[in-house]
Image (cartoon, rainbow, N blue to C red):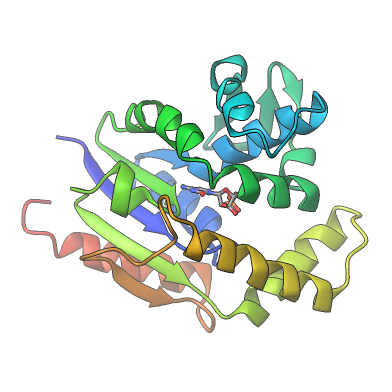
Length: 221
Ligand code: C5P
């Protein structure tokens, strides 16, 4: 049986780094579901599609071929290397916008569930424990203060040469959180049975160890 650990939480909480490290340590698959929304958003921006058109965006789900791997940061979209672009601020904002569309979300459900194979899966996102894998073996909700998340994102964007102000980022992160939390479909919530970890004052390694500790407590593991 494939073991599933869901790792939900707001952007910048460290889910990506912790999730990848966990997947490598445990020998599990890794699903970065945010990348799916990002790829649809980037594809829409590249092709000048209307981001307000739910039907139009949902219709592109099968046009987008996304490739990413656990061991490499490289992401390709329809064969083109979009590693930098896909994590840019404009794609973050656009992805949050299209993630509100129930039609888009519905069309991504089966694709995401197919990542559950082999020994196990680390599923990273917003609705992994609540919607996509409701019977996961372990559900984690990873969070951190807006300030801590903004500083992390600031360092990441500056390192990539994007010109941003910390105050602006804090504001945008808070706004994106609000949108993710308050949307009608698959809102960002610590679902039933999820263990909440506040990573504001913790290193990646500490969070990873904590999750492995909870995983080891599962009787059938
Ligand atoms: O995690 P990441 O920041 O890459 O996700 C980009 C956007 O995709 C988020 O702001 C969120 O709106 C959306 N998302 C989502 N459900 C997921 C993963 C991401 O709505 N499972």
